[in-house]
Length: 219
Image: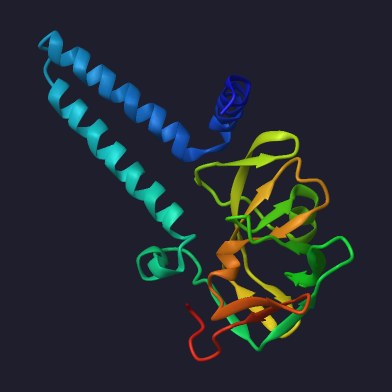
């Protein structure tokens, strides 16, 4: 990675600190640990308890971050549904023809709001522009850790959200994880965290064929 890209990513992360409860909590826990260590060096009573409290807080933050990341892997759904909506995809086979630009575009309804998305097998996460998220009533998930995304305009921080309802063709998804990404322009992306929850998907004769597992709504 180029030095300037690293600097830009660091700057984005710093700007995201006030918006993220987890980042604020991490900084507070690290500061508490530093205070506890200083108290121990000066043999001040309670130093060990303060440092222990800091360690427990950091462990809790690490577990929270793991659960957040694990939500993107359907194999770990049974571990990560605690306190969050179940991610489900149901329906029947849907065929999406390739557009003249070589991409697969679909017209979906997000919370009942017409939204155009591009299916991107190279994208880990489903992503919505700020404008599309606002139109569909999608809100950033409180306390989530910002996600760093590489865009045509450089590295930006995106906020996690939950999509209550997304439907197109013969397919309906509920509780899907996604991100709200500034500087995404007008392009919304349907990523691999959606595709990996299907029974299968393939490209045949210029068509993208999506097949949900109707027998089991949680893949």
